[in-house]
Image (cartoon, rainbow over all chains, first blue to last red; front, side, top):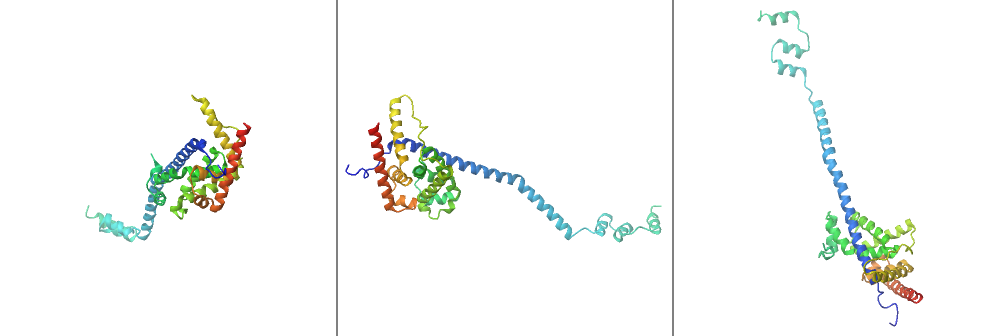
Length: 111
Length: 185
């Protein structure tokens, strides 16, 4: 050999350690990636199980409140639905107490 | 599983890995793990520490795969990232290039052979530890991983001429150190 720097350095003694080291590195990287995936998968699962239903429930409640404000039921609607027609429906819809004459008139057919 | 034998190009594997295909990233790691380890070992010296640095760097590479602008040149991009990570690790840990103690010589049925192989390995590791980071990295990448000077230059942000220079000086020093040890032994 004319120049000691020309030929390749013989590193074959390190070969076994290098191959094993590379295999260990691959395995460790794969494990870390799997763990990372599991972590995020778990977070998403918890979100799906708890957070998302909670958000839907909150949105539904909010919608009910908003819609309720837009169209609140009036007393006269209630009276019309429950009592139909007659003096009692009028008392409710006009928001007043019945007077004696009306009560007497209402009771008269029964007597 | 022979990940190294995956016929897809680095660019294809990077694209698949970016889309969430972890097997594709596994194939990339399988293809380039030795080179990544050689780069890390070139900087930190010790193989065990190089493995720690290397796996940490590769995990970060997986997390930041979107930053790889030229997927076809993934190997160079990866080597640069591992190189930076290893330099930072050395700075953080203030680690000596190679521990003189704590070497394990394999023992077993063919104990004499193991002792001789262990001794040779130890001498080689000691000699490598005497090289500069640049020389060691060039020797490991060129002589062990069979990278070209163009690849080394691209990966380590240097020139091909400098890579040749580091390799030549590294080999020369390695042979001197091993010859001296042999004479002294």
